[in-house]
Length: 198
Image 1 (tube, rainbow, N blue to C red):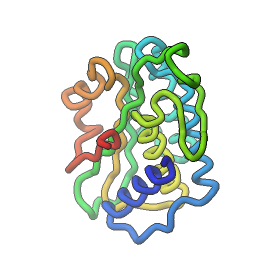
Image 2 (image 1 turned 45 degrees about the vertical axis):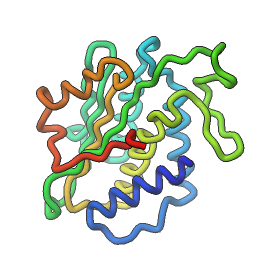
Image 3 (image 1 turned 30 degrees about the vertical axis):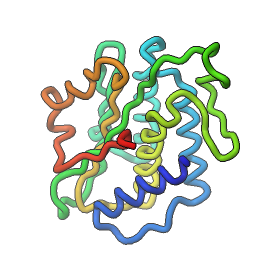
C-alpha cells in the first residue's frame, strides 16, 4: 500500500512539473521511504504527547542532509505544535508553485484499546499498522521520500514545489489556518494537492 502511495505521489509531482517519465523508486529508495515511515509512525504526535515539533525537526534534518537550503526549510512553532514548510526550487518556466500538503499529528491512542501497540510500526501480510500509518503519516513519508529522491537525482522542476506539513489537523487546525495570514509568501501557490484526501 505504501509503495503505491509513494509511487503515485512521485509520478504525480513529476507529471505536474512536466518532467520526463519516471521509472519508479529503486529498492534503496523504497527502503529509505519505509525507514522514514517507520520513524514517524513510532513517534507519538498526538496532542497528549506533544511530539510534533520533534517530528518537524527530524524531517527538516532529512531535507538539510539532502541538500535543501536552510532558507527553504522552515519549522514554524505554534504553541505546543509546529508546521514544516519546505520549498523545492524549480526553474520557473512552468508557472507558479504547487503546494503539497499532509499533517504530522495523530489522534491519541492508548495501548489497551489496540490489538497491536499503536506506536510500534508493524508490517504484516503486506499491510502496515500503527497510529497514523494511513492518517496521515503515509502522506508525510511519501512526500518527504519523493522530494529526497528527486533532489538526489538532481531533478529541476519547471515550477517550485512546496511541502506544507501541519501539526494540529486532528485538533484546532491552527497551524494550517495561521500559514495563510502569517506566512503567505512561504506557501503561496497556483494550486494545492492534499495527500490526506483519500
